[in-house]
Image (cartoon, rainbow, N blue to C red; front, side):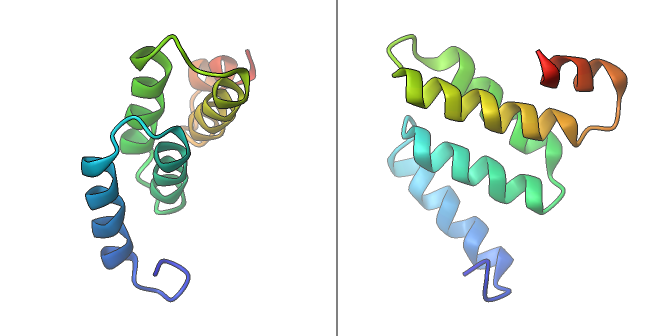
Length: 88
């Protein structure tokens, strides 16, 4: 939907999916990426940070995906502390 220019519909679909599967790492990171592409950085960061603290039983692959998306989101904030955090 997003690729077809239907951003509002895509956002609604992401929200429905998140309501049904709130712990799905793939879904959450894709939703965070979607929000980042729409310049909704604060909301993307919120999803990423929730993922970081939500469950300690993540696989190493999931943790890498979460940290990568968090870093990409923080890098969009245009402030030095966020950039430092993104690089650590």
